[in-house]
Amino acid sequence: MVYLLLLLVPGGLVAAFAFVGYCFGTLGRIGPRQADRVVWLRVVAALMGAATALLYVWGLAHLVGAVMDAAENGADSAPLRPCRAPGREQRAQDPGSVDYTVRYLPIRFVCQTGDGDSHVTDAVPDYLNPGVLGFALAGAGCAGAARLVSRRPGPRATREPSH
Image (cartoon, rainbow, N blue to C red; front, side, top):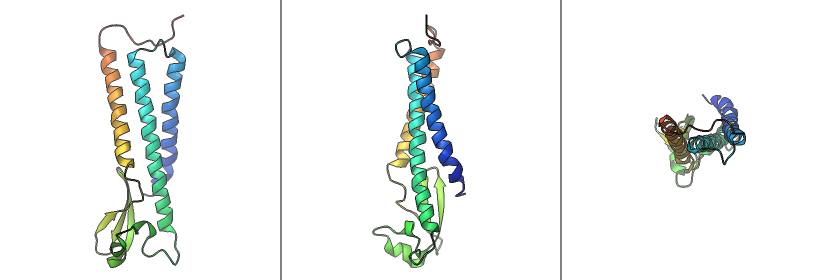
């Protein structure tokens, strides 16, 4: 499951660049002044998609750091380093953090203790999951609005620049 990080990080970066490429390609082909409401809604939806992908990759980078820190075997590796947090020293030592899991939605690093309990660490910043959700919902809203506006009768979206 941790190896999924090796696919998601480059995949997220490719998706972000594809969204940005769509934005600038569309506006470059049509032109910002000739673009109508549908085109602008699609461009904003793609920018929100790029922001979602980049923020998600940022969270995955935090997970990669925590996984590498937990996998490092040394004299200072018990309890697991990512499982140590200010105010949770007792929880990490007694009954002891014995394993960890990685969650991808929402992005989390979860420490599992010897007695079967688990707790989420602060390896991933608190702002990250709400930010990913917010950008994703905003992008979906803009894409849905673009679809609704394009189905209305009236002038169609400008597909090509008029010469």
